[in-house]
Image (tube, rainbow, N blue to C red; front, side):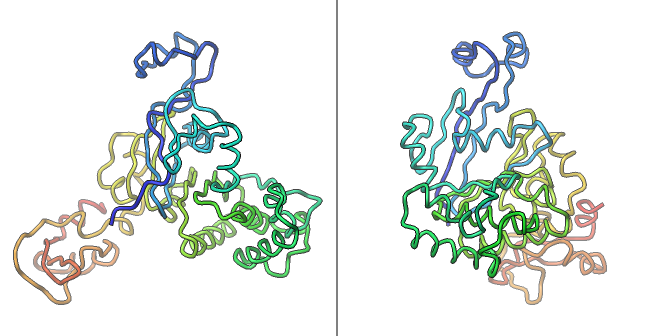
Length: 337
């Protein structure tokens, strides 16, 4: 079933420099790098178009300076793009009033950044409830809502602690709970775990996946770590120099990279746990059924030994046990080695 689009941007540009007004229109919204340099302009986001689907985690990644954090700030209108559209639930955020934008941010967007931004003089409970306080929600209601979220993020018993009494991972949990307190429709996270120690980071990724299974949010998650991206993301957008080089599942990126940059980026990806039999099999179109065959959704790490040790190609079946293809040891070796 096709999922609805929750957020999209179309032909999005962000230029830094003087006299950028009118520049894109005068170059048909397709300026060359030379034209940008001649005008003294820097393109932080270049002609980006993408969709965020309902209930999916879209990971935006790239090296430092690729434009990934700038893009998420354009999607939330923390930075106003130079040109293009940001469509949120059918509304172009570049055309709404400041009041409308504030209302959308307060009620429909949740944001988590690398720096927790907790109020040091307020308790965990008060920090989580703070967005509701800004909205004028009654104290009893906002504190009860915050208490429920404390349990959701695993901080029961720490309600009255101050941020200085918490570990980095616990502080990030407070930030996550605060971003969820007004039940946002879309959740934006900008490298939320990058400042954490590796073990705590892994725990927070587990917690994040648990929350997503429970809440089913539409999520834009910025990361520079490909391992984190393939663990968390339904799809991944790889950025370079302000452009999106490719968007796809981890399997699509490693088996069909769009260009040399993406190929280099995914070169060391753990292909055995990303690529399925369907992706590498030789298709077969016939009315043949097989029991105990390889499933089209099986990962290479689970079928490699069986295929390599077999004397002949192994059948691959769909969910009805209908043979849809065959896979042999040469196909396994081509992908893995």
